[in-house]
Each structure stands twice: as structure tokens, then as C-alpha cells.
Image 1 (tube, rainbow, N blue to C red):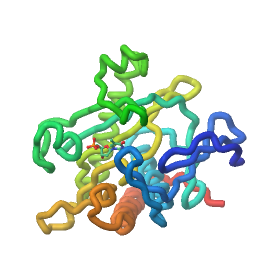
Image 2 (image 1 turned 135 degrees about the horizontal axis):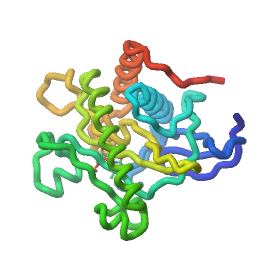
Image 3 (image 1 turned 90 degrees about the vertical axis):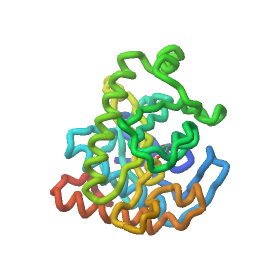
Image 4 (image 1 turned 30 degrees about the vertical axis):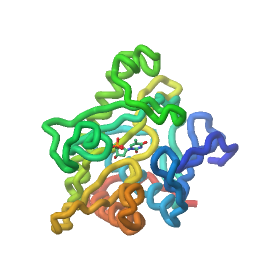
Length: 253
Ligand code: TMP
């Protein structure tokens, strides 16, 4: 597989074409951003950690019957994925009140929700990714009703599987954001990344009674260095994948 022209550069990843039109080459960068790019930093080691975390998570999800665009990891900071037509949606699942939800409804962070909440934001940097509901998505043609039903079903299945995974490594899955896309043959699939950049993960081994963040809130809220936290997540996930004998999709050059 050959890495060809750069197609896109986002806030945390670069995307390249390959000699196979159905496969893209993703490079994870060290850049960290918050507040729609208002806060920015280069954090040595972050790209490698996120590439390895999302790879092992896609393998753990596959072992639980949840498919994704992930093909295989090819280096510390790079992976191959299936080429997708992405829906312009941030798909957010919440199990515990935190972040913008806690603020919006005046609920204390950490309040358990009586059921998971599925939310959508319209991906647009210019508009600041505004909240959108099902009717708005269909009315604007961002996805058809049938596609949205499938996206929602998959998002809830991802939540069930991720909750199982994180509970086994003593981490509370507070909330997370995923993205979905469609392959050239029309298959709707989980895409993008699942990392501590895109999840709120609280340590249940801590025991101090304080919230111990193992996610990007450390950076967003100036609470400390993200690297040891991300390393802890990777170590626990790798140990779980080994213990479960999960097939790992990796071919290092
Ligand atoms: P929020 O509480 O700020 O709405 O975030 C909910 C979850 O979604 C949290 O785990 C962080 C993640 N998220 C992203 O990954 N990217 C984003 O642009 C936003 C707004 C949230």
C-alpha cells in the first residue's frame, strides 16, 4: 500500500490517498485544540497515543460485533481506513451529565442519567457546530430518515460496547463523540476516531472522591498533562485486548 497525495488536514489528523481508491491513509498529529481551535498546543507523543488507542478500541469493538472503517495500524502514528463519504454530524452519546449538557440544563457534573442520551451537532466550524435534532438533519438533507435511523442504532450499539470495554478497565465512560460515514457500496459505518480527545473518561481506580480525568478535559480545563492519562488508557486497553485474545490488525513496516 502506497501513501499518495494529502487530501485533507484537520485539527488532529492528516488524510492521504493510497493506490487503492477504497482505502485512505491517516496520520495522527501531536496538535491539541479546544474551543473550536481557540486554544492550541503541540503535545509530544499525543499522535502516537491516539493512533494506538483508537486502533485497539476498533479491535475491541470488532470483537463485540461493532464494525468500523478501521483497516489496520501501519506505524506508531498512522493507520489505514476505508474511504467514506462522511455525514456532517457530530454524534454524541451521554451516560453521565458533564460538559455542555451539564451547563445547558444546570445539572451537576457527574449526575447519572436515567438513560443514555443521543445528541447531534451539525459539523460546521463557521457556525460553531450547532445542536441539531432528527427533523433538522432530514430537512436539511444531511442524512435521509433511513440513514439517520441506522446511524442512531449504530451509535447506541457503540455506546453499549464501549461501556462494556471501559467498565472492564475501571473507567467510567461519561460521554463521547463519534462520526459515521458511507462507503462507496452504501454501507454505513462508524468512522473517524475514538480516543481520550473524543471521550470523557473518569478513573474508577482513584478512590480520592475527586473526579480523576483521563481525557482531554485535562487540556481543555488546564488541569494537567494529558500524556500520563492517555498512556494509562492505552495500557489498560492493551491489557484487556491481550486478556480477551482479541485479534489485532497491525502491520508495522
Ligand atoms: P460536550 O459536553 O462539550 O458537548 O462534549 C461531549 C463529548 O463529545 C465529550 O466527550 C467531548 C466530545 N466532543 C468532541 O469530541 N468534539 C467536539 O467538537 C465536541 C463539542 C465534543
